[in-house]
Length: 307
Ligand SMILES: Cc1cc2nc3c(=O)[nH]c(=O)nc-3n(C[C@H](O)[C@H](O)[C@H](O)COP(=O)(O)O)c2cc1C
Image (tube, rainbow, N blue to C red):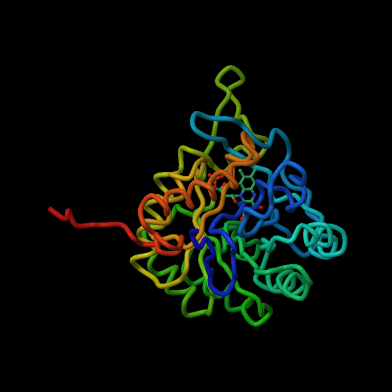
């Protein structure tokens, strides 16, 4: 019997497989379809302090190997989430990671405090890929300095494990990871979607209402593997990896590169039971390769040819 439990910076997960924010509703939408006991955690769709309308339609488009979305983080706000949604997700008996965002560092901290205090939230994940309205619209994660300042504002408001989610489009992860370590984050999640665009050539217009969006799915998987590999070599922070996990082999690749756990995102749209299948496949892989525990796969990449 393989021990599937992992510890993600203080978040105890019974399997190393979670769902990725924004791709699994607020957690309970798949009730009756998915065996939640196979999941290590569910990550809720991003919430901010107050309700947010999101972007104009169309909000997503399918592209080869994935999709581009520009939902624009539509949501009902932190208090609504805690009062109306969380009690029903909590009843499913799976740890809930609350994903938080804001227009300023103060807003992040306010929303994070509400979520941290809520019964049933097991950890907080900060999405730093949204625009900083006070500082010219650059994302909070676009420079190590802004990232550090944002985490510094949030950390005192959060007693539960604090996970910070990074975007893949930076030249070098090392200064970002250093900022997270210095500011006391417990774990890093990666990767968020990659900036992308699709054009309708007949109308000569952008396909998405927001013009641009974020690319996700199978096509970004190798980018995620490289990001996790680099991050694992640059930092000791545990990694929750996502990006094109469609089957156990994708998850195992990310774990060999250094991830402690993985999250299934876009694949859920085509097969809602992907995360369950991934967890079963990781257990089978461990059995075949003589790993007594799934956590032994983390970083077990063999760089040297043994011959
Ligand atoms: C429709 C959609 C909505 C998303 N919403 C969020 C969100 O609210 N917060 C967040 O941090 N990431 C969000 N993401 C990013 C995913 O959580 C994930 O990081 C990304 O899609 C890469 O994983 P995948 O290729 O398995 O989908 C969203 C992705 C999609 C496709």
